[in-house]
Length: 110
Length: 114
Image 1: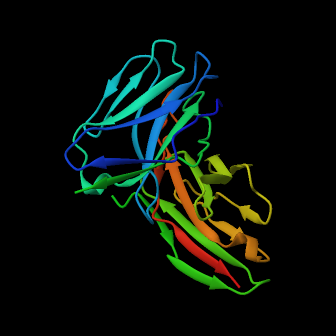
Image 2 (image 1 turned 60 degrees about the horizontal axis):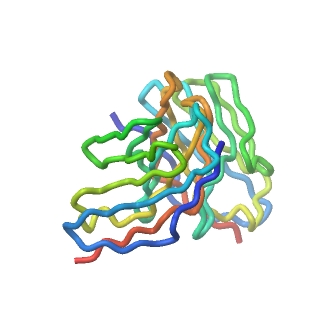
């Protein structure tokens, strides 16, 4: 699976959009981009995934660049409960295992 | 529908003791996984299973054993506990179908080996 690079930490004001970047310059054509998050002391939680097109669900939006070498997870209206570590993961298919890096610690402040 | 449950929540072991971490899922998922997470680090895969009777090693399998006799249960066994096994252990499951399989995680077991 391709490696990913994420900033160690980010800050966001409550109510504002949180934009979390991820670089995956070695991604191959059949690899998906997944995002999970881990709230303190809890198990990771699936957020969203995508292959080429931008994706949106009730939790977030995923913007993937045209060359697929980077992506951005967008939380449109961050709340204090969105404070967590966010993991960007690239994997070949649903059958392969997840490889977690250190992720980005997002701190949402009042 | 409880999802993925893990027991115990916390445990302290002495060096050389053994124990089994329990994991059960009620979503009829084919795939199950065990991860460990050391402080400040991401999760590392210990073992996984693609169905009853089938298991395979992950990134850090040494010191652990698993079995999968039913679809629902995937216990993790520590035979001779060592301080290096102090960690938080997460179990996960996924349907194992389609190109975009999503993993669902349990709440974790915090293990300390002294």
